[in-house]
Length: 193
Figure 1 (cartoon, rainbow, N blue to C red):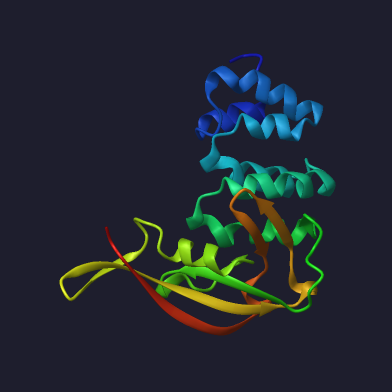
Figure 2 (cartoon, rainbow, N blue to C red; figure 1 turned 180 degrees about the vertical axis):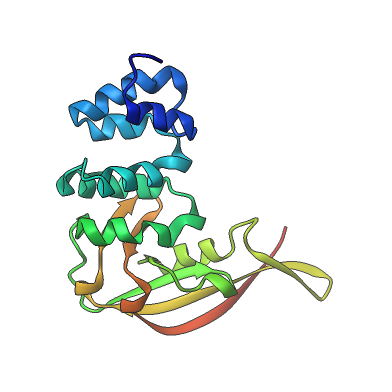
């Protein structure tokens, strides 16, 4: 790997980029081909790589803003709040914000994750998210196993929305938990088949 840039060598060292892609990764970074370079990064490391580019002033804010929605959609749920500084610094990104102000949003989860920065515009999508297996709790009710989740309903002002990301499963709103006003929580159950 003698003809590999230090940045590519570092990415290989942490496992973010496979060694056989290091030269291509380095060239794309040097050329400012941020989407092409990020495509070579393993999904679990995209936040770390984007964060490094941003904190080292390598990537322009316009490019960060363009990359964030798709990189976010491939993120691991456990890293949710670690993405907040990038969304904050990038400014608004994604599709145009909804015209409604304030916006009613929903979040499906468990007792301990009903607050976060990802909110859905569709109540049924939030219910599906709350009951997704294997994260959903299970309980026995009259001898039947049940999936148990929580749907949180909230309101967020348009000015508090950092991103509006539309994808095949629906629309996500990204907003810091401090700007979201929780209106209520509903426990939901569904028989485990």
